[in-house]
Amino acid sequence: MAKEAKDLGEDSKFGLLKFFSMGTAQDKKAYFEREDERAANTQSITDNNVKTQDLDKKEHERELGRLRQQKRRGLLKVQEIKTGERSPGGTKRKVWSR
View (cartoon, rainbow, N blue to C red):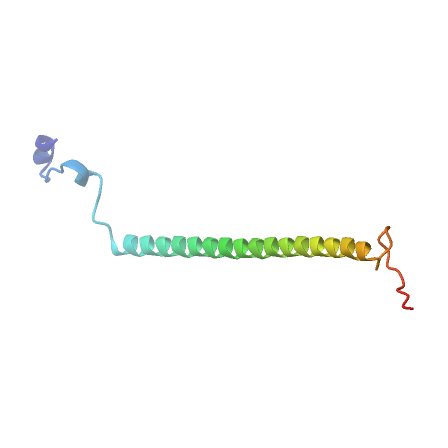
Protein backbone atom coordinates (compact mmCIF):
# COMPACT_ATOMS: atom_id res chain seq x y z
CA MET A 1 0.00 0.00 0.00
CA ALA A 2 2.85 2.35 0.76
CA LYS A 3 4.21 1.96 -2.77
CA GLU A 4 0.76 2.53 -4.31
CA ALA A 5 0.30 5.70 -2.27
CA LYS A 6 3.73 7.01 -3.31
CA ASP A 7 2.94 6.26 -6.95
CA LEU A 8 -0.25 8.35 -6.64
CA GLY A 9 1.64 11.15 -4.91
CA GLU A 10 -0.13 10.72 -1.57
CA ASP A 11 1.12 10.04 1.93
CA SER A 12 0.65 6.45 2.95
CA LYS A 13 -1.63 5.76 5.90
CA PHE A 14 -0.84 3.04 8.38
CA GLY A 15 -2.96 1.39 11.05
CA LEU A 16 -6.15 3.04 12.17
CA LEU A 17 -5.47 6.34 10.44
CA LYS A 18 -6.63 4.89 7.13
CA PHE A 19 -10.13 4.37 8.66
CA PHE A 20 -10.57 7.74 10.43
CA SER A 21 -10.47 11.37 9.43
CA MET A 22 -10.19 14.59 11.42
CA GLY A 23 -13.85 15.47 10.99
CA THR A 24 -15.43 18.88 10.52
CA ALA A 25 -16.94 21.39 12.93
CA GLN A 26 -20.40 20.29 11.76
CA ASP A 27 -19.58 16.66 12.57
CA LYS A 28 -18.35 17.70 16.00
CA LYS A 29 -21.49 19.78 16.65
CA ALA A 30 -23.78 16.95 15.50
CA TYR A 31 -21.91 14.48 17.71
CA PHE A 32 -22.30 16.63 20.83
CA GLU A 33 -25.98 17.27 20.07
CA ARG A 34 -26.58 13.51 19.79
CA GLU A 35 -24.69 12.85 23.02
CA ASP A 36 -26.56 15.61 24.88
CA GLU A 37 -29.88 14.19 23.65
CA ARG A 38 -28.81 10.67 24.65
CA ALA A 39 -27.75 11.88 28.12
CA ALA A 40 -31.05 13.77 28.59
CA ASN A 41 -32.99 10.67 27.54
CA THR A 42 -31.03 8.46 29.93
CA GLN A 43 -31.59 10.94 32.78
CA SER A 44 -35.33 11.03 32.01
CA ILE A 45 -35.54 7.23 32.09
CA THR A 46 -33.58 7.13 35.36
CA ASP A 47 -35.86 9.75 36.96
CA ASN A 48 -38.93 7.81 35.83
CA ASN A 49 -37.54 4.58 37.29
CA VAL A 50 -36.81 6.29 40.62
CA LYS A 51 -40.36 7.71 40.80
CA THR A 52 -41.86 4.31 39.99
CA GLN A 53 -39.68 2.63 42.60
CA ASP A 54 -40.70 5.20 45.25
CA LEU A 55 -44.39 4.70 44.44
CA ASP A 56 -44.02 0.92 44.67
CA LYS A 57 -42.23 1.27 48.01
CA LYS A 58 -44.99 3.51 49.44
CA GLU A 59 -47.69 1.14 48.19
CA HIS A 60 -45.88 -1.80 49.82
CA GLU A 61 -45.63 0.10 53.13
CA ARG A 62 -49.36 0.91 53.00
CA GLU A 63 -50.18 -2.74 52.36
CA LEU A 64 -48.05 -3.82 55.33
CA GLY A 65 -49.74 -1.21 57.52
CA ARG A 66 -53.17 -2.42 56.42
CA LEU A 67 -52.26 -6.01 57.28
CA ARG A 68 -50.86 -4.96 60.68
CA GLN A 69 -54.08 -3.07 61.49
CA GLN A 70 -56.20 -6.01 60.33
CA LYS A 71 -54.24 -8.36 62.60
CA ARG A 72 -54.53 -5.94 65.54
CA ARG A 73 -58.28 -5.64 65.09
CA GLY A 74 -58.62 -9.42 64.94
CA LEU A 75 -56.65 -9.87 68.16
CA LEU A 76 -58.71 -7.14 69.84
CA LYS A 77 -61.93 -8.89 68.76
CA VAL A 78 -60.73 -12.21 70.20
CA GLN A 79 -59.80 -10.47 73.45
CA GLU A 80 -63.24 -8.80 73.65
CA ILE A 81 -64.94 -12.17 73.09
CA LYS A 82 -62.89 -13.61 75.99
CA THR A 83 -63.80 -10.71 78.30
CA GLY A 84 -67.49 -10.93 77.39
CA GLU A 85 -67.84 -7.60 75.58
CA ARG A 86 -68.72 -9.54 72.43
CA SER A 87 -70.79 -12.64 71.92
CA PRO A 88 -69.00 -15.81 70.78
CA GLY A 89 -70.21 -15.04 67.23
CA GLY A 90 -68.28 -11.79 67.36
CA THR A 91 -71.14 -9.27 67.56
CA LYS A 92 -71.10 -6.57 70.22
CA ARG A 93 -73.32 -6.99 73.31
CA LYS A 94 -74.90 -4.48 75.52
CA VAL A 95 -73.07 -4.32 78.78
CA TRP A 96 -75.43 -4.43 81.79
CA SER A 97 -74.16 -2.89 84.95
CA ARG A 98 -76.00 -3.87 88.18
